[in-house]
Amino acid sequence: MGRIAGANGVETRRRLLRAAADVFARRGYDGTRVADIAAEAGLSNSALYAYFTSKAELLLGALRTHGRRPLAELVEAEPDRSIVDLFLRTGADLRETPQADRYLVIEALVAARHDPEVASAMTDYVRERAEWMTGLIEQAQLRGEIDATVSPRAIAHLATALGIGSTLLTTDLHDVTDEEWTALLTRVITSVARTEEQMGTRT
Image (tube, rainbow, N blue to C red):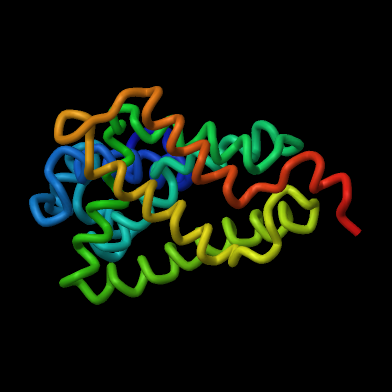
């Protein structure tokens, strides 16, 4: 096996990252060899190494490309919608059965505990995501949607922890009803949101 006939560099890289995401989801980081990813993509090991230098780089590349970011997807799709509404919609979806790509972040976090290369890359990745979300919350505070006395970094931290935790705590391990979850989520999120009356009186 070598390069895919007719494929350019961008297409080959995309093919490798899709293969990496699929293999890591099935076998986990420790159970995956670079050769497994190359075979999944229909490439030779040497062809793979022309694009990626290590298994860790493949893992983080797959996470960045295929890892789910539901809040970011909603913000992109509905940029004018209230961040409070977007948090409620994203939070409600946490109870859904995780798709395979959602486990990439778990594999990366576990691998980071014993692989310095993954640890360094994950520090950057998590920081980027947290800073993006913090900025989103700060904008909402400027618009008066969220109480400005609450730390946007703390809200971003809580949202990140809930997102990661929901990937591990699936409904087959422990579950609540949609009504119970929505009621609690609404209470938590609205506790830091400002009411329409409060927003109307801001200076």
